[in-house]
Length: 78
Image (cartoon, rainbow, N blue to C red; front, side, top):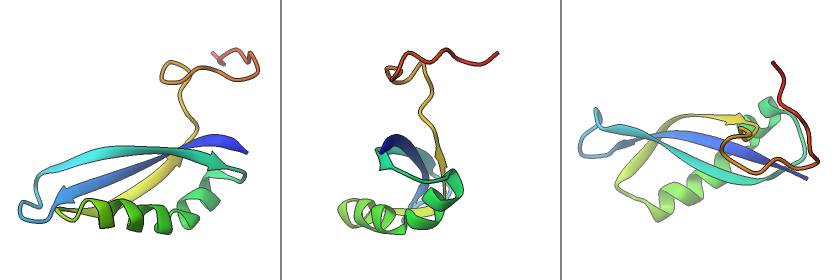
C-alpha cells in the first residue's frame, strides 16, 4: 500500500460560495482514477463528521515530496 492524498473540495451548506479543500491521506494500492472512484465512503465519512459542509468535487494525487517525507529515497523528476 502507498499513501495517497484525497483532495475534497467542500462548500459550506449555508454559504455555498464559501469553499475550501480538505486533504485526507490514506493507504491505497491502485491508480489515481481508481482512487477517485473508490473515494465515496471516505468522503461520506468526512461529511458525516462535518455536517456543515458538502462535497462538490474530489481528486486523488500522490503526496508531493515537499508535503510528506519521501519513502524509498526516490528523487523528484525535473
